[in-house]
Length: 100
Image (cartoon, rainbow, N blue to C red; front, side, top):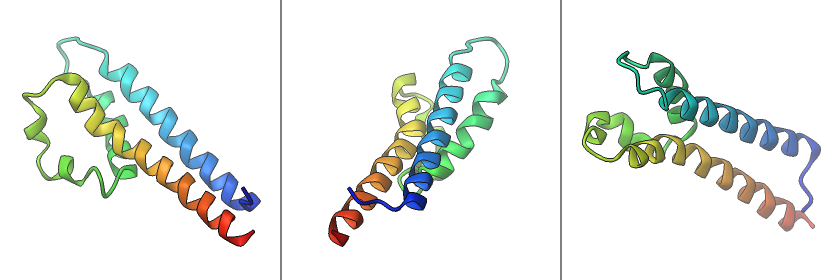
C-alpha cells in the first residue's frame, strides 16, 4: 500500500474527525431528557455533511425518520459519514496499488 505521506495524513484526519463527531453525537443523543437536545443536532449536522451524497435523503426529508426506531435514525446520520471514510481509504488503496 503505497500511499503518500500527505494522503495518509488526510485519510487519518478524515477518519479522526468522523470518529470524534460520531462519538459526540452518540453520547449527546443518548440524553433522553425533556429538552430539545440541541447538542446532538450540532454534532449531527457536520456528520450529515461529511456523509454527502449518501446522506442527501436525510436532508431532503428528515421528518420521514420520526416514526422509525432510534437505531435506524442513528444509522442514517452516522452511517454515510463512516461509509465515506471507508470509500476514501479504498480509493487511496487502489491509487497506491496502481502506482506500484
